[in-house]
Image (tube, helix red, strand yellow):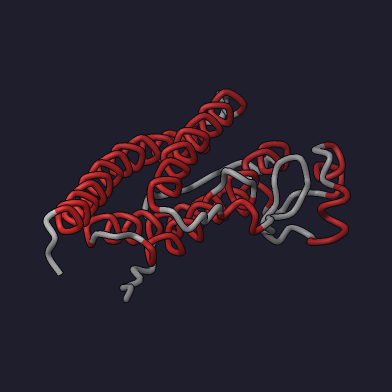
Length: 201
């Protein structure tokens, strides 16, 4: 199903350790609006879509979100690689370090671990796509907050801006998928009503 190119979707080369930034950026790894939730949500929802275009969009974006998960994990890793215990303590990462060292673990900036409730599969294609549109806007808003917090670090700002732009593209593509599914369901409803009213068996 997938062809894996062994390189990041967008280059990341962070020169200075900064666990303080890692502590907030990790929210886009395992937080409720992060890339892990997005990838699992879209790759799960695709099965119930009533048209092939919507399935393809969910598959494409869900796959890209896995690439974004890899990017965010790389950012967190590079920000904590070689950090001293003093830097970790100063950043408020003592509890995290106790449980995970400097491994990249899926959790929100507030500290709670990833929860599958964030995947939000409802069994209704319209509800799911509306959820996806909202999810992309929430992710965009989170990246904008992270950009504010990382304003003095161009090595971090550059990939965060790239990720923010991709959220905007995803939002547009989910809008396309929603319109297609609505048209498909309206067409199906029309034919069902037409057949019921014409007395055809």
